[in-house]
Length: 196
Image 1 (cartoon, rainbow, N blue to C red):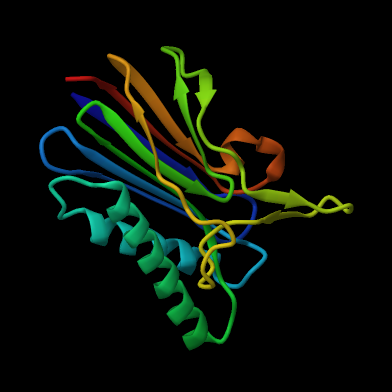
Image 2: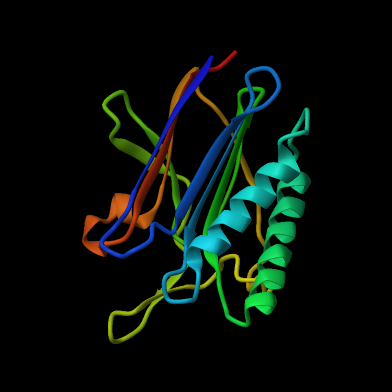
């Protein structure tokens, strides 16, 4: 059995640019998608909306979600962001993370700085599976090096797979959650379950 909770809090800026959605699929399978709009570009919230909508729409009808399905959905989201960027005449983008749980396994992918981790019973992170795709310049500015921005990918996206323990707690979170000093929107998805 799998349970989940999701929460998103707006930071000090006018708009919350984080978007998240969890979808139960067939049986005890679950799909979770989280996007964090890039505030340095125009309309990060629109890029995040597009990414979550396209990925969920691409995967929610699948009886089995495979690695190739996730990659195709990711490329479709990038193309949709490119089209919207051209329509609006401005750059936009977002960090993205996707988790698919099925058959006691987790498929996952993260581009940007959304983290996917295991937590213990108290909610303390015990292991993080993703690496941030960021660069910090000499003035302290932070930039995503791999993300959805309608321009393809600097590094080929890779879906990873792990076997889940008998009891698990998976956490997906944006930088505003794991780094309160960032003064960014804060979003988290917690997925708790027991393997079949």
